[in-house]
Amino acid sequence: MTDVDQLAGDLSSVAIHLVRRLRRADASLGVTPARLSALSVLVFGGPRSMRRLAEAEQVSGPTMSRLVGALEEAGLVERSPDASDARAVVLAATAQGRRVMEKGRRQRVERLVAELGTLPDGDLEVLARAAAILRALE
Image 1: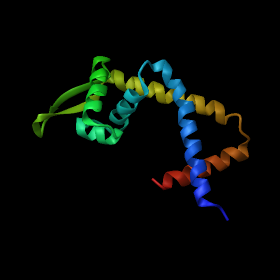
Image 2 (image 1 turned 90 degrees about the horizontal axis):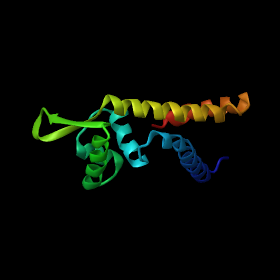
Image 3 (image 1 turned 45 degrees about the vertical axis):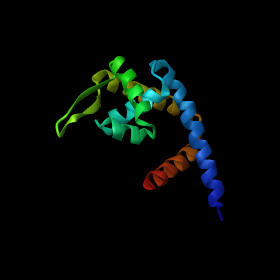
Image 4 (image 1 turned 180 degrees about the vertical axis):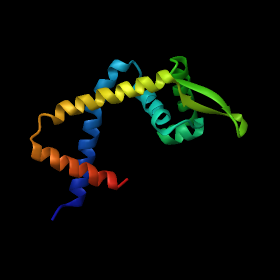
């Protein structure tokens, strides 16, 4: 019988190390990891308010404001008035911001493809099944 606590710990550790390894490919993008993370929420999750972006990234409002300011300065994010609240703004990725994120995703996937390509078919089948199981937990 599988020790669920041990399995959870192992999966957590492996996931963190995998993300760190793949994140190395992001260095060529010229954007800090924190800024890339916020940008990814806007690219893959859609436009949102500063508050909702800060909540998604689990940071304070002032921290998110600084991150967004830097992303705006780099031309990766833009603000527009919120149609439902004249005092609020909506943040959205620019076309350049989307290109940066898509390039980063492509680089991370290519790196992972190279790593997975070293595994035997049986291991790849096990990983495919594990990915499907983990996706079902979402």
